[in-house]
Length: 277
Image (cartoon, rainbow, N blue to C red):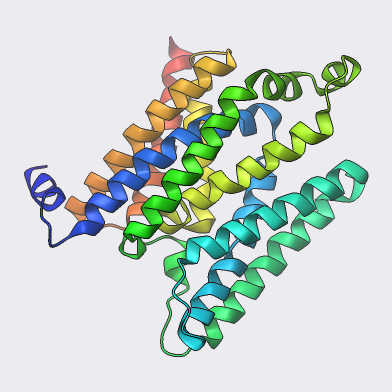
């Protein structure tokens, strides 16, 4: 623990601080949106969005090298994630029977395009750092982008909480009461896309879905009220991200993998203890 604290305050290794700050910031969005994802049961949509965002990541990496751009790969991920989310919401609203096929196609094609861009980038670019995460990729500009996205997500949840609560628990009833459920459902999917992008760099696109859902699932063990679930998920997410970073630093493990394994074990233990209680 002392070595981690020393590294945290060492100006020569800012990526440790960046990773900690990113984890704490993103936990706020992960906890709130993740609770809605759990209740609404749209985790498969979040998975498709996370994998499709690799297309934007790969494109920015490629054009940064070939065209001399100086953009954060996360900016490309945001654009791709929002585009994929809108298409999914549009198709799901018009033809729910075929939405699974469209979601699977976006999932596969987006990831394929991203890997093609990375493969054609001059020099060596490790695609595993994006697929499984790498805290060394975090820059100060990434933290600023995460903070901006965090504010957008949290303000949306605060001001539209009642509408999101209504479509999460009883969409049909909300529609009969005159609520524009199509708009709010689309908006929720777009918020999910923004939230997914928040942690792509640290935990990667493969495991980001676990960090979105596990803290909320753990919080749901203790309460069935949505606002309480959100608060609990935020706190649990912060604890898991911080603990995962500390453990991975001390044992020299990949941070993303360590955090996800810790989250999974914690969830299983809570389920067992809950049953015995």
